[in-house]
Length: 250
Image (tube, rainbow, N blue to C red; front, top):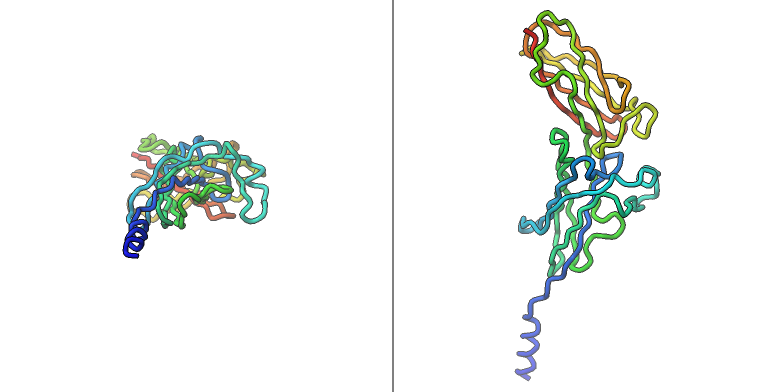
């Protein structure tokens, strides 16, 4: 009898073998398509929440996906990815269910717009997270790029106005145009301008004739260093982006 108990105890003491467990991570731009290679990709880190250990890392790469499928308004939890949709595929070895955290940072081609989003969930060995869209995260924000004036531009003395222009896009790079899927008329784009220690003033930037381009003439109050904070807000989703530039008027 003692021999049987000893054998049973020995069997219970045998470590459980770790199972390779696959995780697919995709990132949707808020109100738009997948963030992928066309925007420099998204950096992904998978951590064990309990220990903080990094279990896997890599890049979300691939296309922005099928516009009609993503924007078609399917039922809740309806998968919207296609085989070419941007994705990170990682494999981790698990010997027990673990609470994992995914950190996704991007879009990497636009560092002034890059944000980090995180998500946590339990993952079971051998089951993973690959069904449907996999582990799906939503990335808020807009890509805002100052076009004019150039950084630290020195204007001719006595200049009374300067053109301010900015390019705006979704985090996936999706286009903003009048009457389009992401209509220009729903975006609030403005420049907040400060000269030295003066109180800042705000100028609205209307759509200016080409995809994602907003511009207006900025009245100047006199000589000094001007700092321009350019912002854009999608009034439907609340997605927001910011960029800055500066110029000098002798």
